[in-house]
Image (tube, rainbow, N blue to C red; front, side):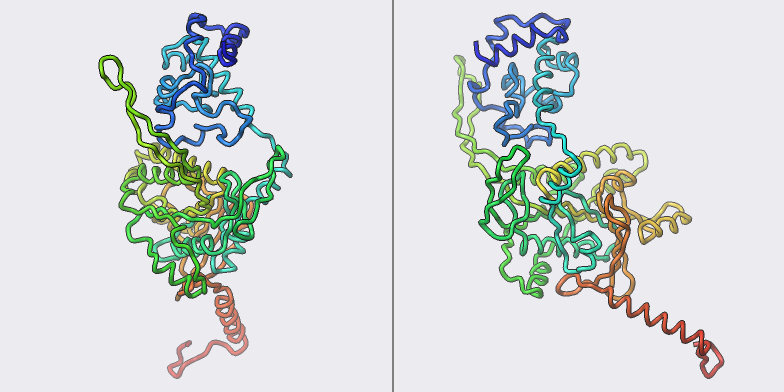
Amino acid sequence: MSVNKKKVLTIATARPDLASQGPEPSMEMINNYIDVDKRTGTSAEADNAPSPEAVIDEEDEDCSVKRLEDISGIGPAAAAKLRLLGYTVMGLATARPDVVAGEMGISQTIAKVWCSVARDAALAKMDVYTAEEYDEEQKAKQIHIKTGSNEFNLMLDGGIPTMSITGSSARFSSGKTQIEYDAILDVLANIIVCSKPKCRCKLEKLGEKCKEVDKKGHACEGIGVHAKAALIETEPDTFHLSRLQQIARERGWMNIIWKNLYIFPAKQIPTAKAQFLQYKVIQRLLEGTAAKPAIEEKHNAQGLITQRGQKAVEGKEPEPIIFVAIDSMNAKFRDGWSDSQNLPLRTRELAAHFSLMEYLASTYNVAFYLTHQVIAPVRPEQGLKMKVKFLDEFYPVGGDFILHSVNNWIALASVGGDVEEAYLYDSSYLPKSNCYFKLTAKGLVDAGADIKKKEDAKKAAAEKEKVTGPAININGNVK
């Protein structure tokens, strides 16, 4: 009897807390279980991209349970059925055995064995950090992506941070898209990162060996590669490569590799659910895909196909994407869930979007930058409250859930001429502050000095008026 089968029998018979109403597993049942190393690849690899909880840790050699098939007693058919029911390793670890037994048509004893093994694997991967350890790890990996405005970067403590979600809200023509253009160019032109997907720390030059060491003392084996960016265009005609190239020319950045920027065009995003699928594509790019060997069709005695063949598929290396812009985040939500009675459905859909973004941001050191459309308050008296909070009486579409889900909130507003104001009105670690910038041919540039000159001129005029009185024209009217 294999070690895995012995484990099933030992757990099922030796632990009194696993008693059930169903029959005890017989030796025949246990002998019918197929060990992991003897199984052939089937639907486990043909499923859609795994959810964040689907894989415990593919790269950890010490972890014996990474997928559902790795749990003793779960064969390919059972794993496929569990996935159809929505179960993952993490999901199975927190599931009620009686529910799993009822859905799978098995005894509670076997269900408890599955849940117990999954729970042990999940708990083994849970780390506990001291505050200093966690802060040190964050600072070692986090990258700040810069724009052309130093004042804007300073407002965000160095730039748009990775491992975080940054949102900007404003009326049209306030600079939301131009900020993402600046950030994309900084990623493509200036940032080198570690090639390992779970590291992605910033390095100084191409080919440089990463010096990061994990908690177990294992050295990272990654090297420096060009960082990449992605733009999800939910509204048509938002992205223009010519504008990015213009900014790059004005700054003298002539060696940008434009194929390092991935575009997800609006034509394939008709709904919010289609928008969610773009994140899943990005997840596959971040994680890479394994190679699949060719499999011939298998037939039974009656000539019926028992296993469909597949062509050989080449594996793809993980892509070093560290910046994802969504322009705009809430456009499709306005179309699909505009009525108040749809608020619970909209909130649930938003929760799915942000849960996946948070997972990708924290796991793969990605910065998400979201532009948000705004809406006027329902009642006029709400306008003043909104202006105090959001720099304008208009506020982001999506309600409180969106406001809670974004780590750093920036409001934008035009203050006259070509000058825009940015106001950081919410952050978990930065104070409220503002800055001014201009939108020029070379992207964002500082405009704080121009605003200060205007304010100084107004103060000087006010002081002069106090001394000499208001200026009077020839008709006796105040100028």
